[in-house]
Image (tube, rainbow, N blue to C red):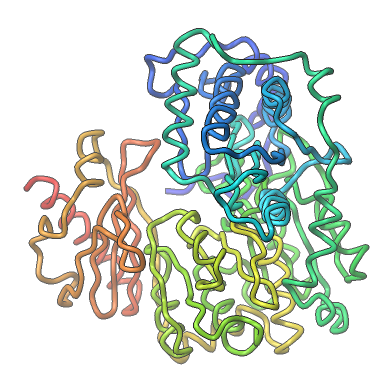
Length: 548
């Protein structure tokens, strides 16, 4: 159930006390015996709030030293690119990281303007530095982005990007987390650190913004957008892309307005998300309510989360697009003739909880579809070698190749996905939502939803380890089951849960990493009522599998 204030402007009572937040960062001492206070890397790094002792100075000092240890073992001795977003805990953590990195003699590159750095700009910088190098030799660059992405203002986040430019795999993050927790348990014994003034003086300035913005015409047809006179409203949602959007407008002479240029670690200008919390989720109609209300002012309006790895697309005719819908039309447009320089055999990458509309589009295009577990890291190898030209997640994160078919980023890029909506309109005369209406007229209109179901820690562990044989059901919502999946069909990797498919519907169940619930993703091409039936029977299927 949605909070009654969802979509309304935040009130003073909703705002975090930034001074208290920062004080807690420096004074809180994590208890390593409490799982909630240990370093834990999810799909997008270590996240937590200093107010809950889940993101303190000790966490960042220990994690940074663990990264230094890891990159030394791997032989990564090139520069490390360090970025940060606008969360209140990002600058303190950025400072802590610099003190440790400098003490470990890491060649450290920081923003030359002292500004904020989106995740895609860090990935872009890493790949640019490593261009032409084998990813297993000396001199390789890597990076860290200090960000909890779209999380509430009280959270901090810290993620590592290895030399492939993408999110670190569990092979790396598990080692880094274990090492970091060992440092915390020892009272930070072995953590090297020097004072910030000396550490910062040893850093090297890097033009993240200019390098990234100047390169954009090589991945998006900026000239076509400019020549068509597309009126763009770009809302950074108070995040790291604020200066980037202003620079994109100036350098590329676009009719682009930065809708909300404010940066405030309380995010007092945000409308509340579905649960009454401030959350910079550009795929949420509640968090994006203020931009949606201005949809008629622009041909295309866009939003980004705090580190700009996600996109939200708002059109005058349909408002905020469902991320699944936009992924489908982006794939149709890009592979359907807009990117003649892409490899002819390049596949389409999707996560297993993304809409099967993408499957139908892939068939019509005659392209291979590679379906992988949740997490953008699974697209990294394919984007690197060009065997995948586009990889996207249902949570509004995607990236794609340059116009010539070479690599752009291996982490999600909400900026190029936002610009692509304008390119699509300029090239076809139709908005992305109008393109999606054409897809539904051709393939049917799917109903898609995600709900939560309660689960104990033991049940979540069992769900993550299920085998297909645990599913005894033969049908789902009146249709024969066609597949029972616990590994992804695209790469054979374990999905950490279960996916069940029929001809016209599917559901996937995955345990939450932070709450005592499991998530049920479901879709039906037979309408909302059938979707509700799929969701209800999904609970029964999962319960039966867990009790077997």
